[in-house]
Amino acid sequence: MPAMREALIVIPTYDERDNVESISRAILEIAPDVHVLFVDDNSPDGTGEALDRLAAADARVHVIHKSGKAGLGRAYITGFKWALERPYGLVFGMDADFSHDPAEIPVMRRAAEEADLVIGSRYVNGIRITNWPLSRLLLSKAAATYVRVITGMPVTDPTGGYRCFRRETLESIDLDAVMSNGYSFLVEMAYVTWISGFRISEVPITFEDRRSGYSKMSMDIFRESLWIVWKLVFRHGRRRRRVPGPAHGPGGGGIA
Image (cartoon, rainbow, N blue to C red; front, side, top):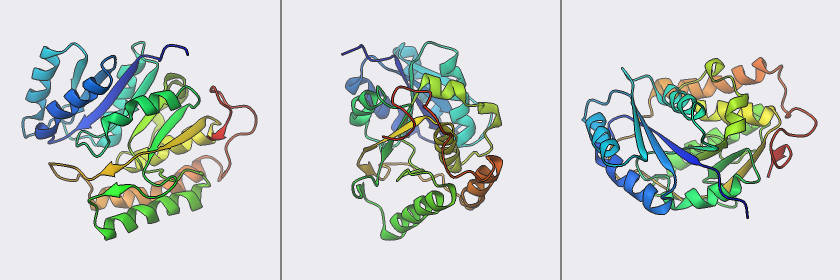
């Protein structure tokens, strides 16, 4: 079996002081060869200072301090650009709050050997979510169905934030042209990957609601999520199928 590519875990943070040390430790215990990049949106709770201490203590931990609260999508783009300036072959996105289990990192790395984007899905082959009220689950499932119907993208969890991109996938995307910023950023990145002919694989994960802190969802983010899918479809000529022909990545186009 070929050696696994070097991997970077990008974690956006805002008011996650109580989580960053424990999530960093858990990741590096599971996958000691990866690096972790925290992108902090100038958290007022002292998250930035905590991250500086982590980075000073471990060369595998890196920090970018942003000047203000720019949002999830801008944080990820900053992290992706940082990764592409360095020799990482795989770039993950995950949350700091343990809703994404670090134990899934090796599974997703293996899946990325045959796919250009791996999504840790809460809904493939059943529903695996704990500690969510029924209303939030129904809203999440309705959003996933909404995205699938409008875009034609055959992904069960297009808003899922636990992801692993191959370097070549990110290099093919014009990150400066990404329109969305909130959770719809996740939809846009998946859609652009799929419509460009890259191979997407979904692996089942168990999603646990955050252990501490608070949700960053707002009404503005929700509204953006509703209209961005229409804007994506019209930007791509209302196409609801990926580009024809062979994919750019290792396993052919479509969904694994």
